[in-house]
Image 1 (cartoon, helix red, strand yellow):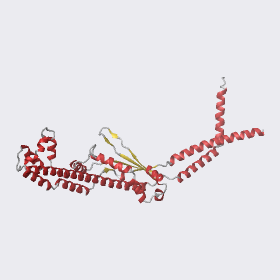
Image 2 (cartoon, rainbow, N blue to C red):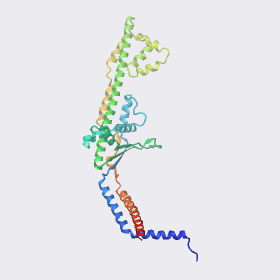
Image 3 (tube, one colour):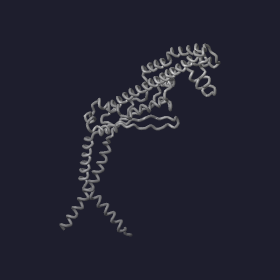
Image 4 (cartoon, rainbow, N blue to C red):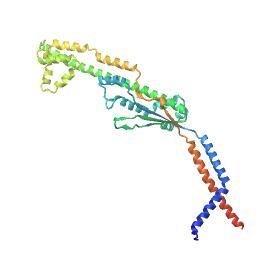
Length: 350
């Protein structure tokens, strides 16, 4: 019969010895593991639990955007909304308004949440802490539609119900400020367009007065140029500037304009009178359209506060599992160290 190798015999002896040591110290191992579990359980109940509240905001598809877009084009806006779809442009304006965090911090102040800390001498540090609790996750780009999938708001707070209220109040305030900004820009654009038109008419009147004066000096009462009839007809409409800009490219345009007095002072004076009596009804109509739009409830961006997602950031289960494993390992080490210490003590006595 062949004998097993010595190293293999040593391994078997070691495994048996280890098993005996663990078995003999099983009570200690169980007690230490339970003690570690209880410590972890007490710790998990003491630490505060934060909750992550998430909400997705996408562009709106409200039909009122069509009317708003036509108004912007009609008053010849500066084109802020024309780079992409109007609803997508407004979504980005909404997010930019939210990113300054003014509305968010104002809601916290009004709710008196740690208001003393928030507006103390260490204000910057405290504001930075609260700002970090609300994060705006940039959207992914949908390559098929060439548009954004929407922004995601992640709000970390200790009370999920309070977090929902804070988020809702913040978004409402941002929407109010956004709406106010949109209408102010529209009204300002309309005002600038109207002032530009009035200024052009004033310059036109000054030019016509000079031409009328020349015509009177030369005693030219009636039309003597074929061009004058066309100019006079166009001048009574708001398309006069378009006509002038097209004729401006012609070589004889300057000559024709400089000789405008040959139209005759009667026609020129009538033209002056018509310009002075202009009521700018188109601008009044646009003002009425803006005021009408203000009275309507427009959904500037799309989100549903009732579809908000909330989850706890405190993982009690993970803490307890780790504590049990740690207690088990430490208890085994303790049993082995105790056994080694007892063995040395027994050898010394012998």
